[in-house]
Amino acid sequence: MNGGIKQEFTNAWSKPNNSVVQLILINLIVFAAARIFKVFFDLSNATDTFFWIFRKLQLPADLGTFLLQPWSIVTYFFTHYDFFHVLFNMLFLFWFGRIIQEFLNSKRVIALYVLGGLAGGLLYMFIYNFIPFYSDRVAESMMLGASAGVFAIVVGAAVFMPNYTFFLIFIGPVKIKYIAIFYVFLSFVGSTGSNAGGEIAHLGGALVGWLYITQLNKGTDLGGWVISVISFIKSMFKPQPKIKVTHRSGNRRPTTKATKSKSNDASSTPQAEIDAILDKISEKGYESLSKDEKQKLFNASKK
Image (tube, one colour):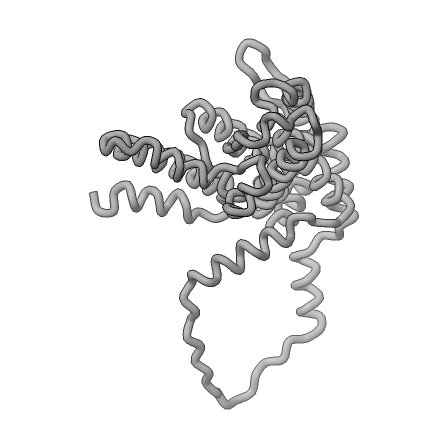
């Protein structure tokens, strides 16, 4: 058992084009760690201390409290306490995230998740602090869970490929646009209920999912800055390779314009052609694409 669980985890994490699994692993690790620490704190008669620490990962509605823990605008959407909460969030992330990952590339799953989480958290704090109906809940309200980020992915996938079909138990084939509409509707009608903060965050994430894909179809990637920030953070923890410069005499074979042109033509697809393929998917579904069109879309997703 050389390597064991650690090696299996490393293999699952390091696969290319794998952001859906990476996000799921982060959420599950945080959930498992929280519950394990809870047991040790309980055994030490320090349960109150555990919940005091755990609240530092949650997003408070109160702006004064938020200023004391600003990191919570990010940590809250990786934090769960209830098993079924994390289970259903991760199932939806897996089902809908695969669509974004397969057709729009892995990095955009992360961008949607983070943007949805941020938007959901900001909308939650704004609504609770500026609409009188919620004023009596502000002081004690705390929010956690990946739902806002997941809703961004669900709605994003539904806007991108509205006719993509899931086969649901006891129901049969259902287009994902109807699944997204149904859950957004439930969040809206629940926005004044007992879980009002979470439902409001869902709506913020859903809005981001719609906006992100509509702008992406117009050629604007709203999540580019998210990927840049994450790439910068990753680079800080990677050892920089030592560069050894050598000089070699002799003639080098020049690259001709014809060679360059051929290389470029083989690796690029005009954006207008990609847009036409995406329009065809929206109207007739992915299965209507020819083998050549699927290959062009796949190639474009890797850029």
